[in-house]
Image 1: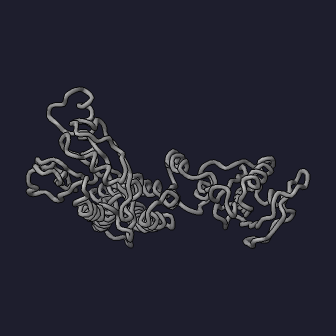
Image 2: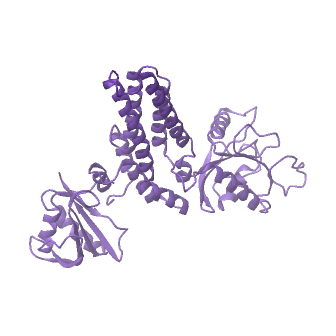
Image 3: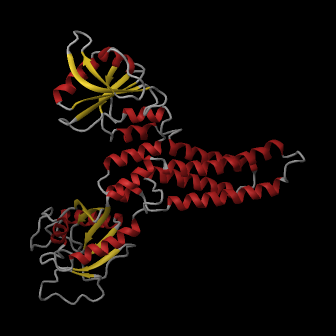
Length: 429
């Protein structure tokens, strides 16, 4: 296996630049540039020299972490250099010239930690979310996953599943022996246990998904032409993201823009005006896309005077309140004017209330789409097991649930998913 290296600290120039090495040749490389390998986990100030001509590269702190008790599970070293670009380039050039050393790929340090059992896949996913976190809530939720909240929950489910599996195997292997409870009574007890576990897993999978927290709640502004959707979008963003004009049908396609408000991430979507008589094919396509956006919205802001379409989380707005000939706002949730600012705070307050109900609580585990689908698969397998009258089929359904758990933790069938996950990581992570 190659030994990898990369800058693992922030962008240069900086006060300190940390170059990390991991692999079987990490300590050999350190010895070649500093003379002797420092004691494990003890920071040592050393002169770094080019092994070819002895030229001084830098004076830096050097730390060594013998595997398997390191972040990657391999021999790992860190060079805490002065954070100038030229210094880092010089050290990286010397390392790259050594046989068996190469620059790390994106996320490769974390991938090696996963392969060596230092963390599981759910913790790696949490670490990826932590690197991308922009709000305090995102940080707290991602940190819980990175520290093993999902893993601990799945481990608990796995323990219960294994107890059921052990009992059904005992029944299959020793059902004719006197010290085993009658087969029918035992199977009924196990079926109840499988049903209870399946319901618990299904309930966890039904909790609000972590994507809403990470990617932002999808808030769609919809209504008839000239309802003021684009003007409201710009007012909510505090900048001109959408073209506005008094001409009906100005917005022909969806316009999306992210915004943060009170620590909550939103993805606002302006849509084409909905009308039963589109003027041309392009407007017809825009209306179809608007309807798709409404269907995928977490929250719908309806800006028409007619009653809004059915949606589980919606606000019926009375926009353009500053226009003198506007009809009364009977039955609507918020009266506002994007031009004068009237009602804008009330709109954000109502949005915040809806968002709180749609986002995962920070004190609970939040599953991403991959984990949620696997939990649903496990719950289905356990429900199938609870309906079985044949012990052999019951045992097979338990094995299917176990395979889903193994995929959550990364023990099976996730190679393609890991490629996509680690591509989001920086080179030195």
